[in-house]
Image 1 (cartoon, rainbow over the protein chains, first blue to last red):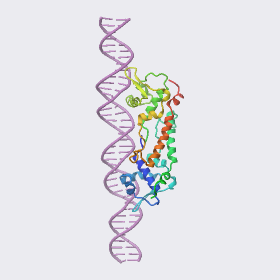
Image 2 (cartoon, chains in turn green, red, yellow, blue; image 1 turned 90 degrees about the vertical axis):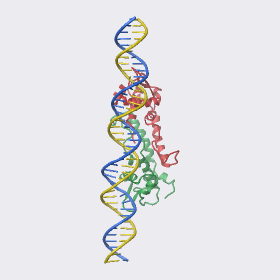
Image 3 (cartoon, protein in one colour; image 1 turned 135 degrees about the vertical axis):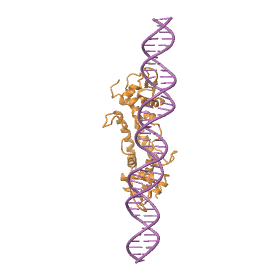
Image 4 (spheres, chains in turn red, green, yellow, purple; image 1 turned 180 degrees about the horizontal axis):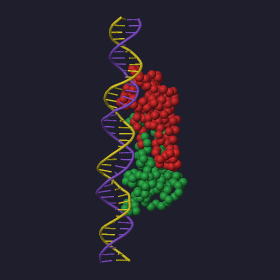
Length: 132
Length: 132
DNA sequence: GCGTGATTACTCGGATACAAGATGTCCGAGTTTGAGCGG
DNA sequence: CCGCTCAAACTCGGACATCTTGTATCCGAGTAATCACGC
């Protein structure tokens, strides 16, 4: 059980976009360079963020990706859910509204983590960085 | 990112052992039957719990697995760590005591979950079950 | 009745097989910008 | 100077290729209890 690298890339990319002064689209090439990833792979990940409504893409020359919603609103949890999916981490005994006590404990612990991620906004960290 | 089925099996097995009245070893066959797993695979998982010092095995006829420490002490986190490993869920930018702000947030959220799992003891749930 | 050996019921560990998911690449298609060229 | 066309710079999406990990099985080896047999 581990976060995928894709999540790491997505978080860093979003951090960059949130910290960015302008709202001009940023090319995938430029975003990939900063993280030592291939542009095509990063593009595949960012597609998920687009589908989740976090960013939008502009095609053609001078195109790229830019934030869609308000800079202040982006939380860690939204990004992670967009990449990893929203399914529960723990599958149990058939699990349909399971009365399994173990399942309940696991869900509660997972919720504790998500609460923290929901409460932490990207912009809190971005403000500590020099603006681009 | 998901918990493995192995973790599920380990948790249920430990729950059974904690809830068990006697401290006689329980055969892997019997443990496997309750969870619809092959005995050989379950045995492989339980080996990890043995190495972690949570249970001990008795070989030969009438052998099996039994709790090693005190029933009251077994927490969810110990079991999960024994099966999944203790490594952090999130690998970041090289990560050596990383100053990466994203990494810090991820670690903190993970810690929130672990805290909950550390605080919840198996026996709390076992007591709600009928003793065997 | 009592020791001794064989049989049986177990766990242990390694080797292996299989499937799924993560990671990454390649390419063709569509889109926008901008430059170049002709009128 | 204006408009048209064409090339360049992009993203998009699907199809592959590869690697790792989770899941599972099989088998030979060792070990403890139990049963059978002979003294």
